[in-house]
Image 1 (spheres, rainbow, N blue to C red):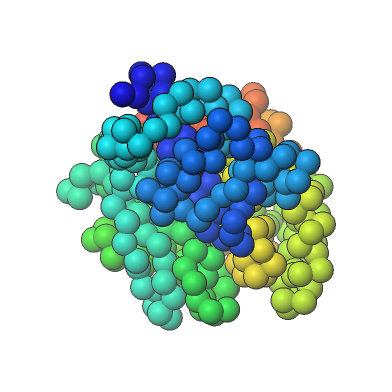
Image 2: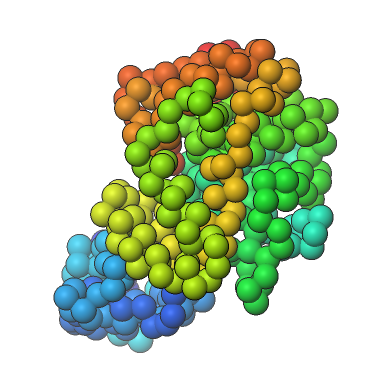
Length: 385
């Protein structure tokens, strides 16, 4: 019989394996992770990955790990869980082990959401997600380009309490397209937003834009104002020309993406350099998700085309024509997307409210605490700050 401690450890490992699943699927199997096998730990890991249909992972010494192996190892935290996971590894506990994994899976993001394939106007396949009462007010969550939907899990769970919330994963990055995936321009990505709304039955919605998703939110409001009731733009990565400065991160990333988006040869040549740079700057708690589009040169090529288009889309001329109520949020110390960009956007929108937090790094947006989520909820439901 599994002890309570072991059941908890198995549940933790199940959640971790689900979290690294997108990255594991993108990388060539088997993915090597640490620590080296001890006391039957490999057998336990195999049981979880097999039950969750995640590609196999092989335990090895930490010095043998690839950069992505280190990222996945940090999320799995096998060294911390090892003693509890290997306390009972006999075949007699098989049914209880599987039940424990299933129970943890029932609480996972993929079980919380409805998931379906959405077809865009040009036929591109989009993994779409929906949560909340289908009859509740609609909210579209436009997350950061190229990122797994579960990166915005805290937003989905909180907003779905009182709303019908939908989101999607970027075209050509999460579905095997054989090197295709459809157009990569901003218009196509805006069309994806409305395709997701149509698929899940939302006629009109509030649009939440996170990071590069804020650009899509602005463009969507301008393109189809009858379908976008209001906006909230969080730490937007805006191109505003001479109206607002960019951080060094924005400038450097834009330059890298321009090179990688030229062709697949260029993407391959900058892949290793860009990955190493990202690995040293992304917080460990999010790296397994944020680094997904950097996993392979092919993913990087597609991602740089998509995100490069967003980062280069000047929205300044459109802002005065967007009449929907808007909430614009940034922080004084966001050194990823310059806060002056959000300040300019809020000033240029006819009906916008600006909130500048005293602190809050850019990626902290995806670990949003109660204060941030309360602010979002108040504005969406009542138009209040």
